[in-house]
Length: 242
Image (cartoon, rainbow, N blue to C red; front, side, top):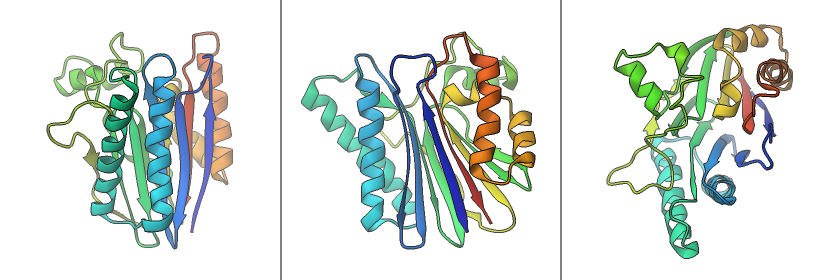
Protein backbone atom coordinates (compact mmCIF):
# COMPACT_ATOMS: atom_id res chain seq x y z
CA UNK A 1 0.00 0.00 0.00
CA UNK A 2 1.28 3.46 -0.92
CA UNK A 3 0.30 6.66 0.91
CA UNK A 4 1.65 10.15 0.32
CA UNK A 5 1.35 13.83 1.20
CA UNK A 6 2.40 16.94 -0.75
CA UNK A 7 3.80 20.22 0.60
CA UNK A 8 4.62 23.25 -1.57
CA UNK A 9 5.01 26.81 -0.29
CA UNK A 10 6.48 30.16 -1.39
CA UNK A 11 8.89 30.52 1.52
CA UNK A 12 9.99 34.15 1.61
CA UNK A 13 9.65 34.66 -2.13
CA UNK A 14 6.87 36.49 -3.97
CA UNK A 15 5.66 33.43 -5.86
CA UNK A 16 6.20 29.70 -6.02
CA UNK A 17 8.20 28.25 -8.93
CA UNK A 18 8.05 24.67 -7.57
CA UNK A 19 5.50 22.13 -8.76
CA UNK A 20 4.68 18.82 -7.06
CA UNK A 21 2.03 16.30 -8.00
CA UNK A 22 0.95 12.66 -8.12
CA UNK A 23 -0.93 10.64 -10.75
CA UNK A 24 -2.24 7.07 -10.79
CA UNK A 25 -2.86 4.57 -13.56
CA UNK A 26 -4.35 1.30 -12.37
CA UNK A 27 -2.06 0.03 -9.61
CA UNK A 28 0.88 2.24 -10.62
CA UNK A 29 1.80 5.70 -9.32
CA UNK A 30 3.84 8.59 -10.71
CA UNK A 31 5.18 11.15 -8.21
CA UNK A 32 6.78 14.23 -9.71
CA UNK A 33 8.55 17.28 -8.31
CA UNK A 34 10.09 20.15 -10.29
CA UNK A 35 11.83 23.38 -9.22
CA UNK A 36 11.69 26.05 -11.92
CA UNK A 37 14.61 28.29 -12.88
CA UNK A 38 14.49 31.53 -14.84
CA UNK A 39 13.38 35.13 -14.54
CA UNK A 40 10.00 36.78 -15.11
CA UNK A 41 8.01 33.71 -14.11
CA UNK A 42 9.67 31.46 -16.68
CA UNK A 43 10.75 28.97 -14.04
CA UNK A 44 7.19 28.58 -12.79
CA UNK A 45 6.00 27.96 -16.34
CA UNK A 46 8.76 25.43 -16.96
CA UNK A 47 8.12 23.38 -13.82
CA UNK A 48 4.37 23.38 -14.38
CA UNK A 49 4.64 22.49 -18.08
CA UNK A 50 7.02 19.58 -17.50
CA UNK A 51 5.29 18.15 -14.42
CA UNK A 52 1.73 18.48 -15.72
CA UNK A 53 2.68 16.83 -19.02
CA UNK A 54 4.20 13.85 -17.21
CA UNK A 55 1.28 13.48 -14.80
CA UNK A 56 -1.43 13.79 -17.47
CA UNK A 57 0.26 11.28 -19.75
CA UNK A 58 0.70 8.85 -16.87
CA UNK A 59 -3.03 8.82 -16.08
CA UNK A 60 -3.76 7.09 -19.40
CA UNK A 61 -0.51 5.45 -20.52
CA UNK A 62 1.55 5.05 -17.35
CA UNK A 63 3.42 2.01 -16.09
CA UNK A 64 6.32 1.25 -13.76
CA UNK A 65 9.10 0.50 -16.22
CA UNK A 66 12.51 1.90 -17.04
CA UNK A 67 11.49 2.65 -20.60
CA UNK A 68 8.48 4.63 -19.44
CA UNK A 69 10.64 6.52 -16.95
CA UNK A 70 12.99 7.53 -19.78
CA UNK A 71 9.99 8.71 -21.78
CA UNK A 72 8.89 10.95 -18.91
CA UNK A 73 12.13 12.90 -19.16
CA UNK A 74 12.62 12.87 -22.90
CA UNK A 75 9.08 13.76 -23.95
CA UNK A 76 8.79 16.60 -21.43
CA UNK A 77 12.25 17.91 -22.39
CA UNK A 78 11.17 18.06 -26.03
CA UNK A 79 7.95 19.86 -25.06
CA UNK A 80 9.86 22.41 -22.94
CA UNK A 81 12.43 23.13 -25.66
CA UNK A 82 9.63 23.72 -28.16
CA UNK A 83 7.86 26.06 -25.74
CA UNK A 84 11.06 28.06 -25.18
CA UNK A 85 11.31 28.66 -28.92
CA UNK A 86 7.63 29.49 -29.23
CA UNK A 87 7.87 32.13 -26.50
CA UNK A 88 11.43 33.25 -27.38
CA UNK A 89 12.50 32.57 -23.77
CA UNK A 90 15.42 30.18 -24.17
CA UNK A 91 17.24 31.32 -21.01
CA UNK A 92 14.15 31.82 -18.89
CA UNK A 93 12.39 28.46 -18.88
CA UNK A 94 14.33 25.69 -17.15
CA UNK A 95 13.63 23.32 -14.29
CA UNK A 96 14.95 20.51 -12.14
CA UNK A 97 12.93 17.31 -12.15
CA UNK A 98 12.42 14.17 -10.07
CA UNK A 99 10.11 11.36 -11.16
CA UNK A 100 9.34 8.34 -8.96
CA UNK A 101 7.37 5.45 -10.49
CA UNK A 102 5.91 2.79 -8.23
CA UNK A 103 3.64 -0.24 -8.39
CA UNK A 104 2.92 -3.16 -6.07
CA UNK A 105 6.24 -4.89 -6.82
CA UNK A 106 8.94 -2.24 -7.31
CA UNK A 107 9.91 1.41 -7.52
CA UNK A 108 12.35 3.34 -9.69
CA UNK A 109 13.25 6.99 -10.01
CA UNK A 110 15.11 9.46 -12.16
CA UNK A 111 16.35 13.00 -11.60
CA UNK A 112 18.11 15.99 -13.08
CA UNK A 113 19.26 19.10 -11.24
CA UNK A 114 19.51 19.60 -7.48
CA UNK A 115 16.05 18.59 -6.30
CA UNK A 116 16.58 15.41 -4.29
CA UNK A 117 15.04 12.03 -3.65
CA UNK A 118 15.80 10.25 -0.37
CA UNK A 119 15.10 6.52 -0.12
CA UNK A 120 14.65 5.29 3.46
CA UNK A 121 14.32 1.72 4.66
CA UNK A 122 13.46 0.93 8.28
CA UNK A 123 13.60 4.68 9.00
CA UNK A 124 17.20 5.07 7.80
CA UNK A 125 18.43 6.74 4.63
CA UNK A 126 19.73 4.13 2.20
CA UNK A 127 20.23 6.29 -0.88
CA UNK A 128 19.85 9.81 -2.10
CA UNK A 129 20.20 11.35 -5.53
CA UNK A 130 23.35 13.37 -6.15
CA UNK A 131 22.93 16.98 -7.15
CA UNK A 132 23.96 18.05 -10.64
CA UNK A 133 25.66 21.11 -9.19
CA UNK A 134 29.08 22.67 -8.77
CA UNK A 135 29.30 21.92 -5.00
CA UNK A 136 28.39 18.26 -5.56
CA UNK A 137 31.15 18.09 -8.16
CA UNK A 138 33.57 19.56 -5.62
CA UNK A 139 32.55 16.86 -3.12
CA UNK A 140 33.23 14.19 -5.75
CA UNK A 141 36.66 15.73 -6.34
CA UNK A 142 37.43 15.69 -2.61
CA UNK A 143 37.69 19.48 -2.39
CA UNK A 144 34.83 20.04 0.09
CA UNK A 145 32.82 17.91 2.52
CA UNK A 146 29.25 16.77 1.87
CA UNK A 147 27.97 18.96 4.72
CA UNK A 148 29.36 22.07 2.99
CA UNK A 149 26.98 21.77 0.02
CA UNK A 150 24.03 23.33 1.83
CA UNK A 151 25.46 26.83 2.17
CA UNK A 152 28.18 26.82 -0.47
CA UNK A 153 28.37 30.12 -2.44
CA UNK A 154 28.04 28.21 -5.75
CA UNK A 155 25.21 25.94 -4.59
CA UNK A 156 22.79 27.36 -7.16
CA UNK A 157 25.13 26.74 -10.09
CA UNK A 158 23.57 23.72 -11.77
CA UNK A 159 25.33 21.62 -14.40
CA UNK A 160 22.26 19.77 -15.70
CA UNK A 161 18.62 20.88 -15.94
CA UNK A 162 15.55 20.37 -18.07
CA UNK A 163 15.41 23.05 -20.75
CA UNK A 164 19.11 23.08 -21.64
CA UNK A 165 20.26 21.56 -24.91
CA UNK A 166 21.14 17.87 -24.64
CA UNK A 167 23.56 16.17 -27.00
CA UNK A 168 22.70 13.02 -25.04
CA UNK A 169 20.23 12.42 -22.18
CA UNK A 170 21.41 14.24 -19.06
CA UNK A 171 19.08 12.74 -16.47
CA UNK A 172 20.08 9.84 -14.22
CA UNK A 173 18.03 6.76 -13.39
CA UNK A 174 18.19 4.53 -10.33
CA UNK A 175 18.02 0.78 -10.33
CA UNK A 176 14.59 -0.64 -9.44
CA UNK A 177 13.94 -1.15 -5.72
CA UNK A 178 11.72 -4.00 -4.54
CA UNK A 179 8.66 -3.11 -2.47
CA UNK A 180 9.31 -4.93 0.78
CA UNK A 181 9.23 -3.97 4.44
CA UNK A 182 8.75 -0.40 5.64
CA UNK A 183 9.93 1.95 2.92
CA UNK A 184 9.70 5.74 2.71
CA UNK A 185 10.67 8.27 0.09
CA UNK A 186 11.15 12.02 0.27
CA UNK A 187 11.17 14.05 -2.94
CA UNK A 188 12.15 17.65 -2.22
CA UNK A 189 13.37 20.89 -3.77
CA UNK A 190 16.59 22.54 -2.62
CA UNK A 191 14.57 25.11 -0.67
CA UNK A 192 13.45 22.21 1.52
CA UNK A 193 16.66 20.22 2.06
CA UNK A 194 18.77 23.36 2.47
CA UNK A 195 17.35 23.91 5.97
CA UNK A 196 17.12 20.39 7.35
CA UNK A 197 19.85 17.82 7.87
CA UNK A 198 19.47 14.15 7.07
CA UNK A 199 19.66 13.03 10.70
CA UNK A 200 16.67 15.27 11.46
CA UNK A 201 14.72 13.80 8.53
CA UNK A 202 15.30 10.35 10.03
CA UNK A 203 14.38 11.33 13.58
CA UNK A 204 11.19 13.00 12.32
CA UNK A 205 10.28 9.82 10.44
CA UNK A 206 10.62 7.78 13.64
CA UNK A 207 7.98 9.99 15.29
CA UNK A 208 5.56 10.11 12.35
CA UNK A 209 2.68 7.73 11.74
CA UNK A 210 1.67 9.25 8.40
CA UNK A 211 3.41 11.06 5.51
CA UNK A 212 1.60 14.24 6.56
CA UNK A 213 2.95 14.06 10.09
CA UNK A 214 6.46 13.50 8.73
CA UNK A 215 6.19 16.62 6.56
CA UNK A 216 4.77 18.68 9.45
CA UNK A 217 7.70 17.78 11.70
CA UNK A 218 10.25 18.56 9.00
CA UNK A 219 8.57 21.84 8.06
CA UNK A 220 8.85 23.05 11.66
CA UNK A 221 12.61 22.45 11.50
CA UNK A 222 12.88 24.20 8.14
CA UNK A 223 11.05 27.28 9.40
CA UNK A 224 13.13 27.34 12.60
CA UNK A 225 16.38 27.31 10.63
CA UNK A 226 15.42 29.36 7.56
CA UNK A 227 12.96 32.07 8.62
CA UNK A 228 14.30 35.57 8.06
CA UNK A 229 17.12 34.30 5.81
CA UNK A 230 15.48 34.81 2.42
CA UNK A 231 13.99 31.33 2.24
CA UNK A 232 13.40 29.98 -1.23
CA UNK A 233 10.24 28.12 -2.23
CA UNK A 234 10.19 24.76 -0.47
CA UNK A 235 8.34 21.69 -1.68
CA UNK A 236 8.27 18.00 -0.86
CA UNK A 237 6.36 14.79 -1.41
CA UNK A 238 6.52 12.29 1.45
CA UNK A 239 5.73 8.67 0.58
CA UNK A 240 5.14 5.59 2.72
CA UNK A 241 5.13 2.18 1.05
CA UNK A 242 4.34 -0.96 3.03
